[in-house]
Image (cartoon, rainbow, N blue to C red):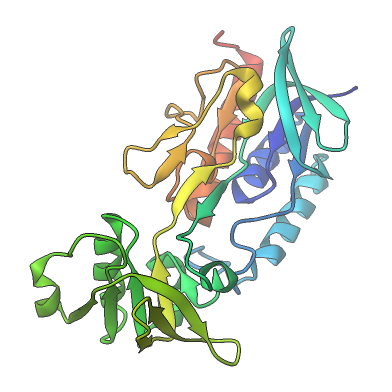
Length: 299
């Protein structure tokens, strides 16, 4: 089997930043990249200083080139399992191959679970958005509809209200929002939502079960975010509910270390709200911690 000092599972901003830090420290590192970044549907990365508006896939292409430039290896594939083996780990890939590592860095990201409303998934990352900091400027001054999915949707509505004077809160199946919504210029529409209406490849409205169609150009929805970590079951490492109620994550300490010795995690797999910049920073920091652990193990 191929053997590396560190195997990084996930080739997004966190994984590539961790790999870059390790490769620059002359560690043998392999990144296993499934090639399905969460932000792929978006037209650009936002809030990342020096790279504002860069297409997500271009950013990753640059990151791969940088990692390879320092001797790191990157393969396309999906990890399906990992197990302890002596003083290290064996990582199994979907194609049947395996690689060995002394340390693991989990940066596999998360999956956004959306309400079962036709049209949401198809428009996700385009005119169905979730983050006012990632997409807000691009949808400013447009008619926005916030589709309630839970308590966080109230916060969502207040944030998007900063960006437009035309905001409607669709209760869908959730309790009534605070009574001060009207004074804040937020209209509330009762009743469950049936579908997102699309005309000429753009959202044109939100259709209620009653048949009423409310014209909108953008839908904001808070997804339930679940870490991609099923392949870690063999190590006894499982996702747990996040304290925020936003979904499920892998808990880590301040260095990115998980409860399983030799395994670190960084990015959205542990921090559900991490944007590209903070995910990259966490990956780089975890990479540095892994390098130090290889020098002076704490376990």
